[in-house]
Image (cartoon, rainbow, N blue to C red; front, side, top):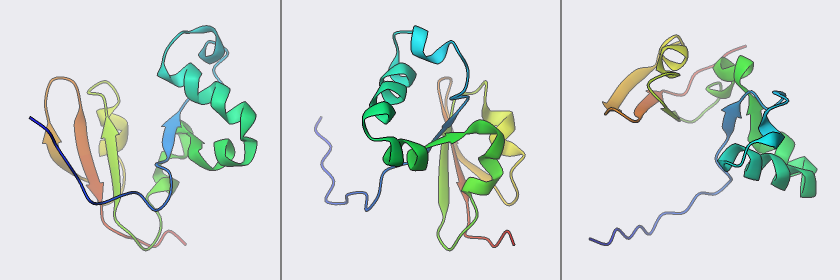
Length: 103
């Protein structure tokens, strides 16, 4: 089956994680790849790779915010203001936060 979409992102997706964890650059996984890429594009890296402790701030603004999380991290997303889980399976959960003001 082929999935084809005519939509494209207007800006990069934000990725929240513990980027200051000293183990990140020592592991061979997707987090290390993004961590290394941010060294070549520091401004983009700073804008895209966000600290997990500021997760709630990511959903502030004028557009709906979507979160994709592992079941292990789902409780952290579930604690966000106004969040709704829209999908879940054994590997991932998709959450939606309507646009909201945080000021």
